[in-house]
Length: 107
Image (cartoon, rainbow, N blue to C red; front, side, top):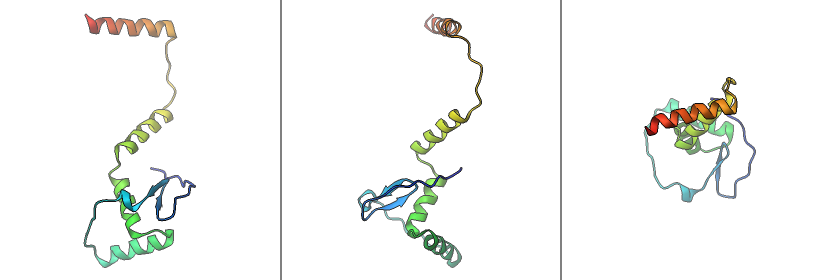
């Protein structure tokens, strides 16, 4: 999946992530995990490099690995828009074909 860097502004007190602003009032669950020193160092290094919090990195990782419905829909739409063009019958022929399918379904 290719990430696009989006330019936007968040209000004071918000954390930005790929076009999304997270406000503390939006976050109502706490997650506590134990990780080894090597993983912690990787997270700190990346957070420092990108000037974001470690928490932001963890949220991003969750969003990438377990996309929500909106992300799934966007991916499906992108696949449709990126699909190769296909031959389509003229409108009269298409209308007859659809009417035939509908009449069989109602019978």
